[in-house]
Length: 422
Image (cartoon, rainbow, N blue to C red; front, side, top):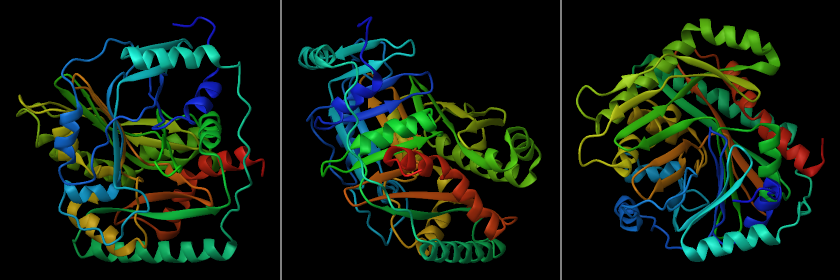
């Protein structure tokens, strides 16, 4: 433990240079950093068994949420391994990247650094802390160029037309709700860790994440949504449905709008029922419970959510819970498989990590994964991120388009700040 710690920014910049670097935030205020060249889970239908083979029954002592285990992401298209889906688009990044880590360097909510893991990892982490200056200089970034007006119009026309198609499916009874996303591409180069630091400052998220890919690209997530948390024999999920812009309406009006919106309440109820069904596959009979509807601010928008929890059946574990519920129901629609078929027919590119999940399976059995919304990939020549909305029978195409952009405001502001283009 270091009483005079280096800054979070200096640690993040140093760790980002290491192989296998990753950084996760959690709602309690922890920031967890890991790195290393441990074994990687293969991209195949057998990935759950490969994860179990890398996990250990005993957890290494440490106060941080994650000390050792398997950490990374499972992308949306990896749902073909867990659900009846055959996506026609292949993502530009691997469908999943999960790696074994043997220790963590974590900053606690009180600002102290805690090192835990194997002797080799702890020695590395202690040396890293001791050799850091108060703050490393920011990496050089170059201005990103936003989409042109013509590209924006094409995206809007395609999106609203797709909403109309979904409404036809809903009226025909093919589905009750479909989550429709579109991709935003920003040309130019940006340093991934600088974007992560800026986004965290502009809009800290309870389940934020930074992951370094093998090819040098970076995944950045600013997610407010819990997909799954497993502690002991208890599993819980908290789907988000319903969005109101605080910048357009003001915080009080946005909250009131969600509180009294029959459309948003119905939208959340549909997804909660889907999540109850998913968790019911691995839960003890009668143990599934649903909490009250909660309305909370997430940066520039207000969201509504409800927590669903259950007791795992004896013999079931966090990997079972994950595969039973993936892809997350809040970003597919209901019923899940039919909604994913409609998504696949209408969205022109793969989602990749977006609407997948980022998190970890810990040694000892615990697990936490976010829903990878407000999530994108930063590359050497452009940055891609997706934004979406849940479409129900009461949806209006132009309003749904506007909702997606309210969700993307924090990303665009962070990129502008990181590159000095505001």
